[in-house]
Image (cartoon, rainbow, N blue to C red; front, side, top):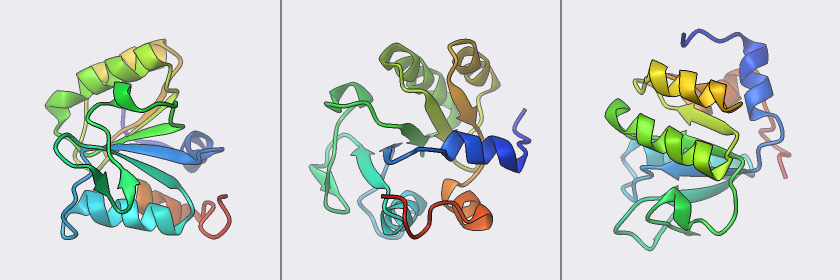
Length: 142
């Protein structure tokens, strides 16, 4: 269920400008922070979703996806798999059409639910690694 051909990855990332990152850490040594910083360098707008912090990487942080005053193009999840169902349900409710689960984050039932709601979801892949590997919008995403 988490085997994707390149065209599926490219299609999911097509037209993405804003990426809400659930679980984005303010700590520079954390994978979520490093990935978000790289995404910014590729001209993506990063929207941190993390309770208890005001901002990460110079961007205003929100406690919950529901608190973001606009609809991000994609939700990137850096949380344990046990939290994915709730995050996917929120994306379905908010009409956010694309979800990306980082390496090691898998929930096949949440993916089925998302697909049933016409939401694309990729699991167990690093968005940064895939963007680099496929050469997607690295210099002119804006």
